[in-house]
Image (cartoon, rainbow, N blue to C red):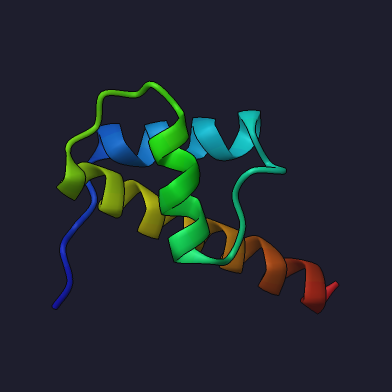
Length: 68
């Protein structure tokens, strides 16, 4: 099984996706690079978890848009 995402990292991911929707999308590598540009003070592991969760949220939004 994969790594579970803590509530704090989930909240941070959701806030970042709401504040910077044009910077983040469905590409994990691009999301990781965008997180590097922001002064968040995340460790490498936390940055990867946040980038992955943002990618998952973006995919979920895309799927919901296609269903409608």
